[in-house]
Amino acid sequence: MTKSQIHKHPLLKPHPCLAFFAYAYNLAEATRAVEVAGALRERGAEVHFFTHGGPHESRIIEAGFPLTTLQPLITPEKSAFLMEIDQGRRIGRQPFTTAELTAYIESELAALRELRPAAVYAGMNLPCSISARAAGIPLIYLMSTPGTYPYFHHGLATLPESLENRLTFLLPRRWRDRLFNRLAPRFYAGLRNYNRVARRYGAPPARTILDVVTGDLTLLADLPELSGLPAESLPDNYRHVGPVFAHLPLPVPDEVRRIFSRPGLKVFCAMGSSAPARVLRTAALALRDSGHNVVIATTSILDPADLAPLPENVYATRYLPAPQVNEMADVAVTHGGQGTLQTACWAGTPVVGVALQFEQQSNLDALARAGMGVRIPLRAFTGERLLAEVERVAGNPRYRQNAQRIQTLFRSTDGPANAAEAILAFIR
Image (cartoon, one colour):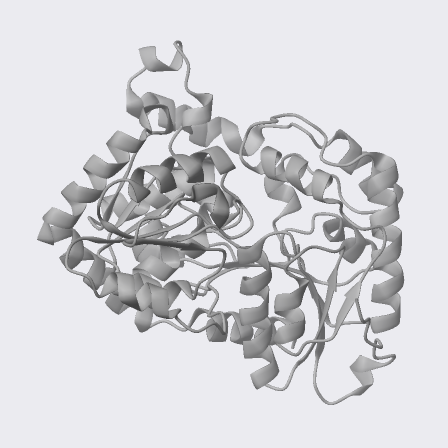
């Protein structure tokens, strides 16, 4: 990895300098950061990226931003562990040891002291929520609305499937959801090591993970019309900016055009880079054998060869320009990640999804309320159920009509530009 020279005195320059800490193991995270950074660059700001490694560092380099890879590196094994925590499969586990956190923070503090940025964009890189505060630098987050205090305070959350059990099923749905909205923002788990290290560096301890990812400025990459969270009710340090998703500089492959030019139902299946392999494999194999025209983006989850043999009406590859491919499809199949859903909304394509964790469940439920998609409960997810829902959604024109209504909202909102303007106003 070529490491670029850090500017020594950026605050002496006429334009503000910002440090972007990106978690480069997650495609959506890295590309969202690049989109916001690009909008800042257009407005004269300087942006320097930092990571602790990851396969999607290339996205940052290709976008022309200076990048420094800090030691220690996050290993693929550690990234897989962090992803399992994110998906709710390791509730209460400590994501980092105190020694690991200390090592990350020391390297980040050294970089921040040399760069001296006006603000830090934190992303999913949790250690810099301590290092930025220890350095006395304002902290900025770009978040999905369901992962924030205001979302819970307005009673918008629903109890995640992962927490359902025989006891919760005895309660009416509205009681379950009301309890979850009250208790979830108070749930303390997996932060013992984090708080030990935070105290050592003079940073405030966190009561919950929501404290960790709440910044001096927290940007919400959603539309209030979908999330249900009114813009006028946000605290002073929150801003709605609208959708932020990747526009990868990739051409649409000829194979995609060939398959989607065939008569019959056209399905695009993509689950970001965070879905478990078993879920994507179940969906991909069911679609492969359905007889429909199918395009599958496996990203880093699966090797496309794992789905062989592919008939002439099916194409699988790792990465595709999701907005353009979604525009060519009749239905999008997804796990409910923010990036995959937003590209479907931008394209005006109805969605069939299965959620693996709370945020994805909330995202899919928002589209279901808007009438442009359905969420299959994880406990009921099978290949047969998926195909039935895909065909039902494709056969009902109301889903397409509602998707086009949401599309109009999305295309009238420039999320990266709004985020850049909010950041510049904040640091001024």
